[in-house]
Length: 152
Length: 82
Image (cartoon, rainbow over all chains, first blue to last red; front, side, top):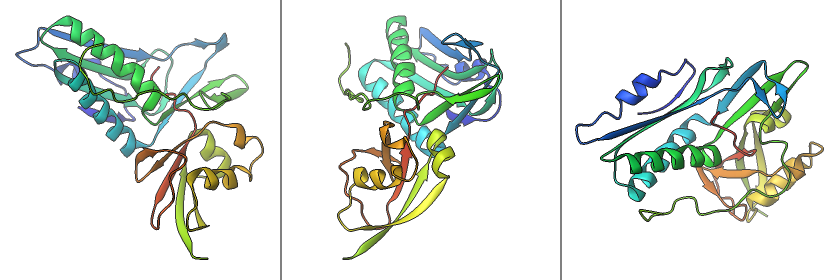
């Protein structure tokens, strides 16, 4: 399951999507919008995506994770539009035969999503709003994005 | 010199500054980096923003040379997740 959704995310549904009789472990990560960021009180969050490309990149990440670790299934969903504070903006579920692979892959997938998948967050404060990431200076970081080998 | 018609889409902070999309005529041989320099010159401060490029919905390097019919997307740094 790979989705960009304007509706509230249901972690149980994402978890169900990776159910597999060969999986001894299911790891679910939910990223939840925070009330404060860098000391500022956030009143509202908003996400925007290049939807088709975001889905393509999420599928590529899942495929790369499956090359790297022995996994059963991967599901990734991200919310767009206004997200009230405290609600999940992203849910990632990974099933694997054993927990080590599931934990490692889940961690890797959320880290790569935040670096690669074309989604942007806008934080609204009292009296202003900021696109997160857009205020940075300097060139974008370069790194190997899709390592093909399994293991670390 | 022959020119190419290129569609450019912007997202997030760039969309708010430059609009959702624009059509540009560029000389054959133009790179994405050169296209971006021209676009960024239209709005103060944008040339310092690190950006990433996608053509036909795949990330490409700034050295990519534009081709007829290319649809370009220009992104500010991504910030998905929570």
